[in-house]
Image (cartoon, rainbow, N blue to C red):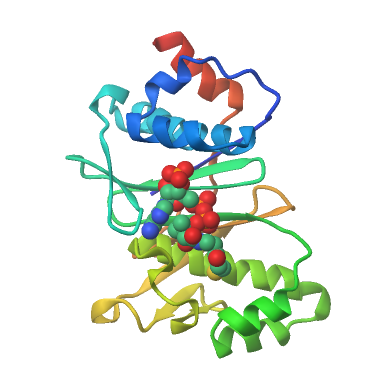
Length: 228
Ligand SMILES: CC(C)(COP(=O)(O)OP(=O)(O)OC[C@H]1O[C@@H](n2cnc3c(N)ncnc32)[C@H](O)[C@@H]1OP(=O)(O)O)[C@@H](O)C(=O)NCCC(=O)NCCS
């Protein structure tokens, strides 16, 4: 597995030709987004995937056809690789592997974690958060949130699965799930790419990279503008 991240500066000019590189479906979807930030995040998430498939797997952009499952998870058609992307605030992140993978990044905001976790998380997760020292509770909440999201994205079920139907076992870094068939075991790995964000990856494998590969925005844009 490989994990990749790129920070976005929303004031950077984005050449129009970048929109010709992404799939027509995404281009149509992005044209309906009102907010410039959402358009840019949506553009860059596919560009990041196309960039890393080219650089690390030798798969050129024209060989990439993205299809989407019934729950919204994108897959690579006719290629033996899986990927997943996530975006929050200024970060776009992606994971690529030869098996299912899910990734979630969230910007840490001072939200009412007690109310949200009591309403939507399992009892074990709520108790886990509230057992932490007060100053650590918000981070524990985000750790569980991104763990749950990354699991739902790894399985591809998204929010068709209720959030309190499974628990993330935070101590061991494993997920205990009563929703996946065959009692599969899933594993989580968090990365600290910025103190203001929490990033977690979920995989059937317990082997994760030590750290994400960081790209600059200029590297991502330059790769396509120069080559196209
Ligand atoms: C869509 C969902 C899978 C992730 O949403 P999110 O956390 O808001 O967004 P992220 O940035 O992490 O991920 C978005 C990407 O996930 C991918 N994705 C969409 N549906 C997916 C699915 N079912 N499985 C895996 N990946 C999916 C897409 O590539 C999407 O990016 P794109 O639209 O640019 O292609 C879904 O879980 C959701 O709507 N979550 C809402 C958040 C929430 O309520 N969380 C509760 C706390 S646990």
